[in-house]
Image (cartoon, rainbow, N blue to C red; front, side, top):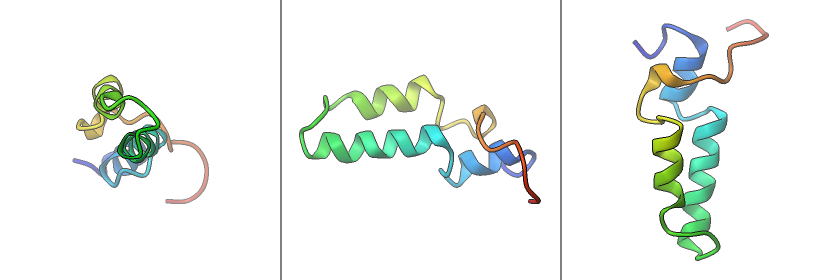
Amino acid sequence: GFSDTRQAARRYFKNDTHSIVAKTLQLLAARGEVEEGAPSYAIDRYKLLDVNAGTTGGAGGDA
C-alpha cells in the first residue's frame, strides 16, 4: 500500500521532490514559460503514478 514506506506515502500524497517539480512545471506550462509537454514528460520520467517508485523522504525524523 501507499504507507508501506515513507517514500511511498510522500509519493501518494504528492509531497515528494519529483511531484513538486512536476506541479511547478504544470503551472509554468499554463503560463507559457515552459513547453506544454514538460509536465507529462516529468510524470512519465519519474513514474509519478506509481506510489512505490518514490525515492525521497526516507531519512530522518519520527514518522
